[in-house]
Length: 425
Image (cartoon, rainbow, N blue to C red):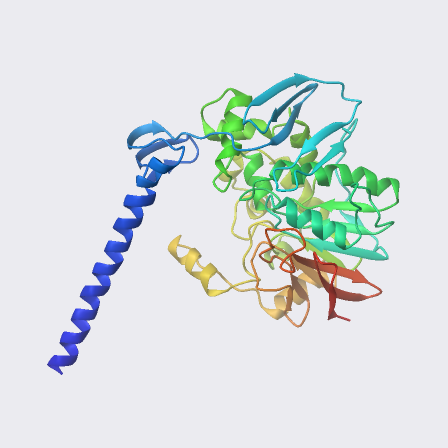
């Protein structure tokens, strides 16, 4: 017994030493910072020895602004007839331009892709209910990954290599979270922007659903953005506060800000209900119809005051864990439960009966969500829930980049190689 106890104590001791040693070495080499992502000020920061071999500032930092820098082509960011672009030399250029003429968008990737956009004359709020088209393709959570989006659209014959819409009267649904993490967020948004008009000219349709990362960026929350976007926001807005600078970039003064404010957080296409994160029985209890959900959400786009709401309907949609763009009740895997627990909350799973009631309330047969990552496009709740948030490939033509195709009452999994296999019939 004593020998077993000795072995356990020794194992725990050396385990603790190894963990402490690992944390110490990684901090020593790669650094650590206590950073307020609202203000951009670090109360404490250590660059790490790695900074000696890179272009980062080296040393200890106490109550100092965290340094950010431009990193590769980006933009354009458009305000009336002024556009800002970051060139290959990491210089921010400001120019006036003729809004009637095409504008080039340069992509930060190995192929140095580029395309043109033409600005819209006006913006109107999107309709939220549609008949089912002959073909529908959906994908979500691209997160600034231009390579994935580009090859997915090309190889599934939504557009050609000249960025022309070739999907006819088909519909393309982009189910939220095209912001953050990646290095081509702006380019992805402009690609979607230009495809919208081209689709309509061919009697097709592009649906862009706002997810939690769209909402966060409208509010100036750049917690998940690469630092290049913070730096360009500071330079364009002339504000040092990160939240205020980021909020300016997608304000009602900016072209993309105006465009994003027309988008919905929930849409119904035929018998299919699209929402970024999920819905719970509370939407039935509050008698919240689709148009009312979108109206309330749109009212608070870009308004951080939304975090102090008290009205039951508005609080549910804007400031609760059951928001249509934050909900996790339909994807209660262990990691999400743990995250909720660490934040002092509990994650309550939606039951089959509750989902059936939700679908019945909205006269829908299936709910399609992103937001919660799955290993592969899959179904749940007796096939009434379809989950399409997967870890897309970082390169073009990756089989990891996936979405769904709905055609002839059948649902297929499709990838950026143009391959498809039956999911449901």
